Image (cartoon, rainbow, N blue to C red; front, side, top):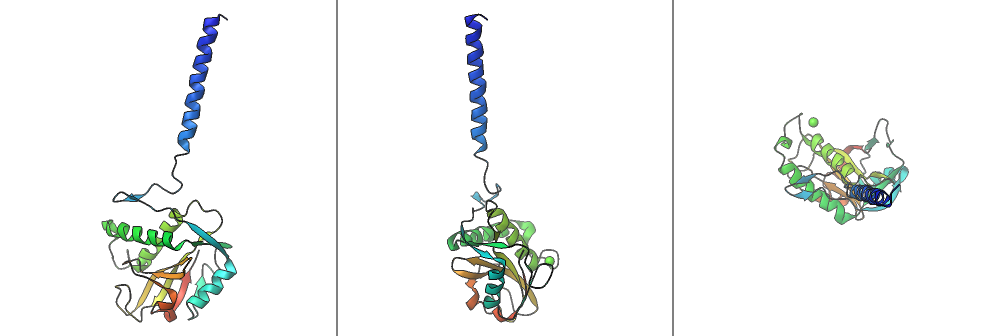
Length: 202
Ligand SMILES: [Ca+2]
């Protein structure tokens, strides 16, 4: 092979190699959480804190909501996972704030009895929390749904009947969040804490 041909092949090889390396480095930019944004604000990336075991979660929920509620997935007192992820409080509140904007800016997510009502608002939040914490592999994000007798008006939802909302375990303990508004309070101050009759945690 002539020296000139060799030179051309080496240069071409280097060019192909550089292109491969460049393409590989591009893949690092794939977002760790799904690329969702609302009004230019990206879905926040949740920050993890400690891990709780299945039994610790059951015990904590019984203390926080002492009715005592049925804590279920398929069977009484049985959760779906063995380990659960507590969230950094500030990070969890960022998600709450983002979700308030998300609900408000999505016309399809207006309250509609049966079709999109309290249980749907609560479920949408838990799904989004899963997505915002998608990079965690050590435990299920500790966001649960509360089913409660709405004895007292709270978070803009009038008293009476059954209601569904959300509880989040952060570094400041259990926080109750009303996804139809933006109210958050600790479990101890939640006025209907003694009327929670079912908790869904999976
Ligand atoms: Ca519904």
